[in-house]
Amino acid sequence: MTVSIEVEDEAWQALAGLDQLVQSAVVSALRGAGADPGESEIAILFTGDQSIAAINAEWRGMNKPTNVLSFPAAPGLPVPAGVPRPLGDIVLAHGVIVREAAEQGKTLHDHTVHLIVHGVLHLLGYDHEADTEAVEMERLEAGILKGLGISDPYE
Image (cartoon, rainbow, N blue to C red; front, side):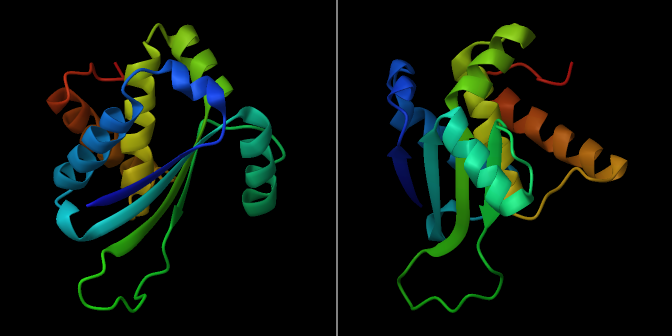
């Protein structure tokens, strides 16, 4: 499992143990969804509200910040032997996540882990556009988070 982490917004440095938090969340999400973490590669960008708003505007036509964006790798990409299979990229916005955590009475750590798990599941093809998809994705997230010692965020 290869996880590339880039911290663009220095405010993320306040979250202690960011590298370990990311590794744990990604591996747990992959295993919880039945994927093999050993052969995968994910890139995660920790940024701020302005940057994610620009990305959101460019890729989703929504000129506003959001908590997390996921960009799955193109399916069927040829990957040379011995090279991890890219699953995609995840982008997280510090300001939005801090505000949401405070509003929801969660720690920054727990809310960040939840959104990383959420982003990984999107990379694996899970979605929440339809009610049945949302129920399945939320159930899977809650189970993964429980394994990490984090309460169900949907209760």
